[in-house]
Each structure stands twice: as C-alpha cells, then as structure tokens.
Image (tube, rainbow, N blue to C red; front, side, top):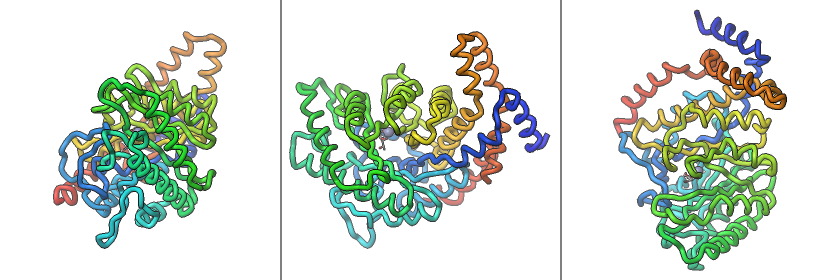
Length: 418
Ligand code: RNT
Ligand code: ZN
C-alpha cells in the first residue's frame, strides 16, 4: 500500500474513536518547540576553553564536534532540515559570537554579541529562547554563583543575569516572538552544609536583582529551573524544587521550569505538569531522558515522554507550556542526536493529539475504569506510524528510515573532515 492509502486507512481507524487526524496534524505544525544549540558542541560554547562544569557532564568522543559558530549553524541547519514542525532556537550566553578578536566577559555581554544568531533565527522564521550561563567560568567560586557569600562573585553573576535580560529583550524585539529566559545554576555543596538557608536567601536576592532590570513583561518570560543534585554537588542544591516553585509563585511574571531529569527517579514530571497548571498561568519545561540520574540522554518516544506530552495536550495547555529540549550526547553522531530527540517529542505531541482524551476522561469520571484500561491498551497498537509518516510528508521532511541516510553522507562529507 502506498503511504497515502495507509494514511487514509489509519485516519478512518482513528476516526472511529472520534479523532480527527487531519486536525491533529494541522495543530502540531503550529506549536513551537525550542531546539537547544548546545547539543552540537557538548555544551562548550565560544567564550572559554575550559571544561564543562556546574554538575553537568557530556560523555563520549564522537568525531565531528562543531568548533565554531559557522560549524554549529551548519550542523543545526542539517538537523533542522530533518525535523518536522515549528522550531524556536534555544541559546546559552556562552554562545556569544565575538568578532575580530573582541571579547566581553559574561557580565559585559551585549545584544551585538548575538546579532549573528538573530540573523540566523530570523532567516529561519524562529523565535529565540535564552539562558544565562552560570557555569564553565573561572568566576564560579567554590561551586557557587548567585548564592555565593563572596559579594564580588555574587555581583558579577547578578550583572551577568541582568545583561541576559537585556539580550532576551533584544531577541524578543527582533524576532517578534516572546523570549523565555531560564535561570539555572549548579550552586550547591558536595557534602553536608552547615547553612542551608543562607545560600537560598542570597540566591533569592540575586534573582530579584536580576529581575529588577527593566524589560517588556509580555515579551520576556523569566523562569527558574530547579534541580535535585548534580555531580560534585550531591548533598545540597540551592535551587531546589521547593525553592524555585515558591520563588515563581511569589514573583509575578516568573515561571517555574521543570526539567524531567531533575527529580528523584520515581517522581514523574507528567504528574507535576497538571499540578502546576492548576496554579500557574504559564510554565516551562526542559525535556530530556534521565537514565538513573540527570544523564541527559537523547530523548526517545518512550512511556514518560509520551505521558508528558499527553498531559500538556489533555490539559489543553499547549499555549501555556513553553517546551524546550535539553539533552547532550557526545557518544553518537551529534546531528542525529538532535534529530532523534526533536522527532521523538514531535511524535509524542502528535500521539497525544491523536488520543481520545475527552472519551478517556468521561470513562474515568463515570468510574468505567476497566473499559478505560482496555481502550488505553488497545490504542497503543493503532497505526500511529502512518499518521506520523503523513505529518513528515506534509512538513516536507524525510520519513523514518530515510533521514538517517542524509546524516551518513553529511558525516562523510562534512563531519569527519573537521
Ligand atoms: C542542568 C540543567 C540546565 C542545563 C542547560 C545547559 O542540569 O538542566 O538546564 O542542562 O542549561
Ligand atoms: Zn535543564
């Protein structure tokens, strides 16, 4: 059967459950997902030669890592050409582009250092999200930045945060798309601290100072990202879940950001999404795949990924949840890693849009739980692949089994020559 016939047949099967697959496809084309630039070069950036620090780690030595802005953009373009759906560009401050030997430290960054990225995004019709970089820098003192007891250190990082607010404002103005600016630090202690509240009070004050920088409240969306622990900071994290949630709840316009690698392994963000949506008008996500810890493995179309997407869709919250990918793998072809992860999240969203959510809710509310289980199981083997193939076709990107051939030639022609 040719693809078109397979789609028509799948459409009829889903139609019996009241699902309009054409509408699902059309809806998904309009939903932006933020693509993280840092998958292309193992979270290195262009403003330092040091190692990746801050409790996060990339492992692997696959050849072809992007070393310059041009290489990173070239790789990203290749990846984007193989991903269906609407993209937003997610940048970190350490990806500033300096021209002609010029350099500015993190506290002195200016919009002009990101002008090339704006050009890149505009040409591809993408908005931009932004992240101050509070790691991989010699001003991280004893593992601390915004919570440091050293006032000089803390001031430096506050100034970095403010500079990033100004840059976020510039991104939003230039692209016409709101910029989500996420504050994450690896601040914490390896061993049992003697003071847990002091660093948190300083962290609170620092974020408040950063947010006191003037910006367009409708166009810049500051977020605070929590974490349970990092490598080398196993005992205490300043920006814990309770800290950041409470910060966001008490600071108008500040969003909580949940990264699904940042919780104890038995906790699931799919359950936290609807909990936060009861209270916050908007929330943000970092979508990743934690394997036993915050390992940032490439996102796959697995159970929890599907469940998170389902929650966003069945809470009718696609317009209230800012979705960003956040993983980094240096052990496989980096462009493929980008593509697999992005396509997986697209699949998860499409799958969620092809789920009979109203019917399932009705069964739950009528306590018809046996029937609910039967249907939830049966739909798992519906011909979703045919809907996905049609979505890829309509978006003009290669379908499964085909896109990897392009990566193989790209690796041969471009990556291994680096
Ligand atoms: C680290 C956080 C953070 C980073 C990026 C690079 O654990 O998830 O979001 O991954 O900022
Ligand atoms: Zn994250």
